[in-house]
Length: 373
Image (cartoon, rainbow, N blue to C red; front, top):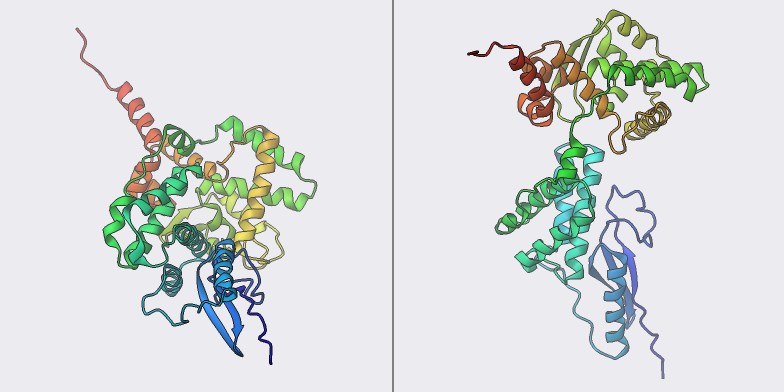
């Protein structure tokens, strides 16, 4: 009598085409869908575990193993006509990719959708139709460990879009407005450098770095960001052709809005003289990715700020943009001109820099005559 070999249920990952671990189906920590497979009666069987979390997939595989060991028939392996939440997530991301989202944006979307799918899988919610209002309320409550309201707001934006994409617009009221706390408002408030702090910062550069080429590059980087208010991702990808006539002419990486600014002649010459080993870019060597280049520059700036005693945790390169706005308001620039120079809308500028704008308004009002008796 021929003995039947025992069926062993194994978990594996079906990676997406863009996953950096797609060559290793046993890699457990990516956000790709997890599946199960086993052999029975000479036939190979495969079945989705309906989760992106390896631990949850192992629990499902253990239950399947128990059924096989006890002689129960495994649930028929048929492709469901209704896509799972995990399948919807892949379609949603593919749709975003076709719209040309950046790699950084795609990573954030993947992370937020992965937390959503993992949370719902743990509650045995595998299909959009399974989702309930209490599920969504509990999921959003799990964000309490995310300290920044901006982080929670971005997650909510992505989850709202995904929920609507799955056809569950009825759940959108559970993801209503996130109200920033006092700590959030204090952390997000603009913090421009004073003139004294800028002098300390520039004086610290040669004390932090020994390489004269790097000293010149970081010094010029600081002067450029204070003078133009450019975001660091735009500075990293600033090309020499963008400043060839003494003007900065770019489209922002984040919004695509145009930025046109006249440069100080001395700063213009300094930018053209920066040495980075690349004939195209001003600050970036062109090696690696723009994301890694941003990280490297931020690391350099953090060292200098700490050395100068002006470092504020969680607020790094954006302080140069704050300084630009503060100085332009002091010089009497209209808000519309500042917004255009930054590549922002007036509404965005007013929302973020209301405290600086209100301060200047109060200073002007203080100089106006009042009635005396």
